[in-house]
Length: 241
Image (cartoon, rainbow, N blue to C red):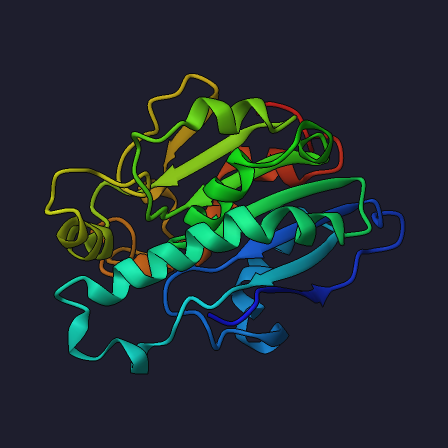
C-alpha cells in the first residue's frame, strides 16, 4: 500500500483562511489526483457555499485495472477495506494536524467513509475539536458500527446522505457481506446524534439518483441539500442544521 498524503486542491478565499474541507474519495479513485480529476467535487463544495481551502486526502484505493475478475468474488474489495482501515487508524490524525486551519469539515464518499470512520474513532479529543462537521455520502460501511463514539468526537453536525436504491452499494457492498447488512449509503445510521438525509430527491435529473443508475452521481446532488449548505456557510459551520 502506498502511503497516503494530503494534496491542496484549492486555496481559501480572503478572510476564510481559518476553514478547510478535507475530501476523501472512494473505491477505485487512486488516479483521481489534482484539481482536474476532482473538479466536480470542488465545484460542488464551492456551490454549497464553502469558501475555505479544499484538500484531498489521497489514499491507495486502487484502480479499475487492478480489479480484474476478482471483483465479483469480493477479494479485491476486502483488500481495499483493509487499506481504508489502516489509513484511518494510522495516518488520519497526522494528516489532519498538517492542515493550517482552525475548523475542518470532512467530506467522504463511498469507501472514503471507511477511512473517515476509522480515523474519527481513534482521534484524540484535542484534535477532534477542530472538526466542525462531517458529510458522509454514499457510504460503503456498515450501519452497525460505533457511530456514537464518532459523533462525540466532532464538535459540529454529522450528515449521512444516503440513497435506498443505490445499485452499486446494493450489489457490490451486498455481495461482500453476503447481503446480511446494509451500508450507511443505503439506509439511515441508527444514532440520534447523526442527521440522516435521503439524497434521492435532490438529484438534478431523473434516472441518476432517483432510480439510482449511478452511485457516483452523489457529487451532482449533495450540494443541493440545505443541511450541507447550512454547514458550509460561514455563519453555519459547526452548528447543527
